[in-house]
Image (cartoon, rainbow, N blue to C red; front, side, top):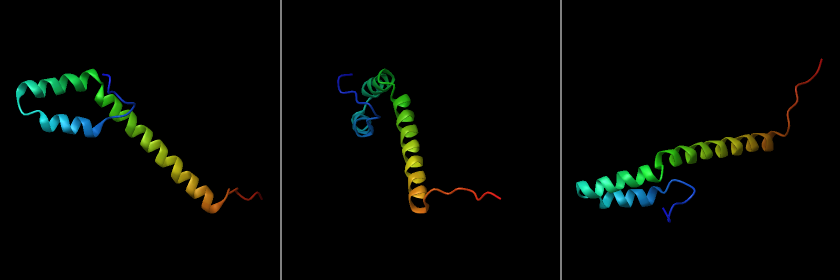
Length: 73
């Protein structure tokens, strides 16, 4: 796991899948994905991306319109 990064390494896994031409190499890929907790990393990265997009959208809305306060009667 020395090449393990903070996020899901899509390109690396895709290349490994491309190279997995026989049962043994496919099993090694599956074992690697389990060892590196690839699904958990992908979900964490997706969650982080969603939060960043939400924050960016909120910043754009507030930046374009300024702070809105409801008028008091």
